[in-house]
Length: 235
Ligand SMILES: Nc1ncnc2c1ncn2[C@@H]1O[C@H](COP(=O)(O)OP(=O)(O)OP(=O)(O)O)[C@@H](O)[C@H]1O
Image (cartoon, rainbow, N blue to C red):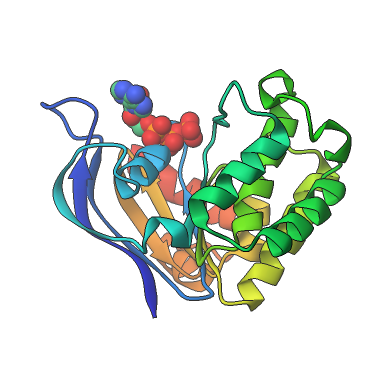
């Protein structure tokens, strides 16, 4: 079953020029889609368009209801006046999740990501990695149908990255799906089922690793294929 669908979506920051052009992609139940591309390619813009944070000029977007997806942004966002635990309470109040279950899961995740000691502190004073972990904990606690993650691995220490992958893997077994943008191609290659490669706001290749290999003519890693496709584009 398709959980997320974008059909020929174009839009951008200025009224004159589009940043993304006719983007078509979809994510099915239990599937992990990697959104890849160089700096400035338009990955975050595609995610913003998807979440209605950017005016979409053309195209159609189908997304589950807000309580069914969680967004982990590239740059963590917090309420200045709420402590870590108050953020969890707030998320629970908004989503209407069961109190006991949410508390148990949040406490487990705080321990796993080593934030228990700062549960009553304000996230604005956290390091970038700690803030990123809190965004992850809030998303994982909500147990949504769909995770939309913009650069999940930047700023995380190796243990946190491993723990995040393990927790997401457990979520996949539950049927949850993931759309993630990332530069970490070796990890993407291992965990994603399909890939969408974006350059200058346009999709230049998509499919499974085998599809991407065929398209690039390179029988190598995702990074090798990516390099080849990018070189072809620049010629
Ligand atoms: N707030 C903004 N206002 C105007 N233009 C923007 C804004 N944010 C991004 N852009 C432009 O949109 C284009 C795509 O940027 P985007 O952030 O989507 O790229 P990205 O693929 O996520 O890059 P990175 O990997 O560096 O995060 C770039 O040319 C960028 O300059």
